Length: 451
Ligand code: LLP
Image (cartoon, rainbow, N blue to C red; front, side, top):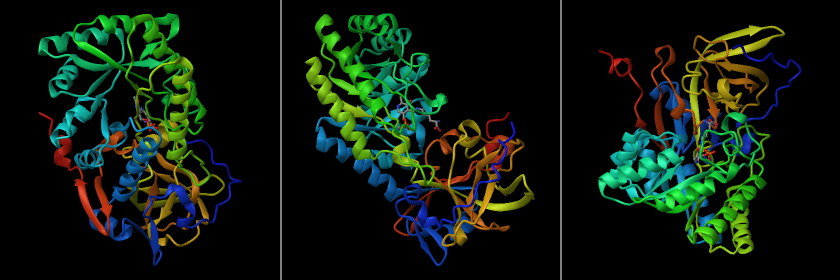
């Protein structure tokens, strides 16, 4: 698929790096025209480690984890924050999440294995997925995970059977599709009726299945879960979901005599990918969801549950950036200016997949205004392979180090080795120190499984 035609009337924004505001990692600075993150010179780091390179601002991630925890605890003491590890996970990340006292959402066997590899407390692990394999369920239950979020009636039977075989009673949630249409890209909208996820409310199916869950011998239904989508700016959708969920809790209590003790509202808070994006704050998200829970519980006369949220993107996206080196420049007058970098859809599929927008800067010209409109294309064999389409950038030259902001979520975790491209290393930066937390993939790694 080709790129959409450029809007030739678009003017460069003349912003310098620091004008990008909320798009930047929290420790971003400019010294002598160089971009620094975590006190580390991004130009030097690119030269030392090579590019493409994922960089994560550790202080930024930790501060957002604390902000989430504190925002919820201040308004609602019986609450917990679960990090949705699908956004970004390596061992060091799992250690940091454990250290910050958050819980962990895993959605595949490998994510659980990573958590186990660093000794993440199993009781703080929540297991998701619409088609967890019997083997994944067995691994999770044997590991002693805190909660399995059951996605369907078929899975309910499987969980109960496997738990029985292992001689345990597994605490579960049921994932409900609350029928709320969140205002976001249709590919990442998950709460609406036509969804592969969760128990539908249509024909009262979810409510009827609660009875099955209560009757199943080796599970204990402790909570309900919903997740209405991702990259959501309009908070009212969360309030709408809460109303549906709490009403269901009330019916379960009055008709089955069972109190739902926990309510997990999923993730979804959006972030600023462009300087013009205006997402809601973590505090506003906490206030909105807590108000809705308190109001609805009072209205439907149900006891206040333990409240959980499951953010991924809003904890890590803005902390991350990707560094590339400019290798080729190609200007097509009245069509487009291509700046080719040494990565692309293999390290960031989001632009090709969702038409995602990102802000770039030249790390070795970070104090200068962005005076040109360019497309940062990748090195892959696809016309649609681009990381940034028609955005402002300083005047690019061969060998420049380009930083693309906001790539901390769903880039590494969705990366591939297309065209035999080894996956980039991941470097965490903090207090002037850079440490490689995942080394660069090698050609030998690429062939390691071949026989
Ligand atoms: N909980 C559940 C059950 C989820 O499915 C997700 C994301 C989250 C929590 C975290 O949502 P967040 O806070 O990150 O919005 N690949 C897409 C995003 C897919 C999100 C999938 N589920 C992207 O790159 O935009």
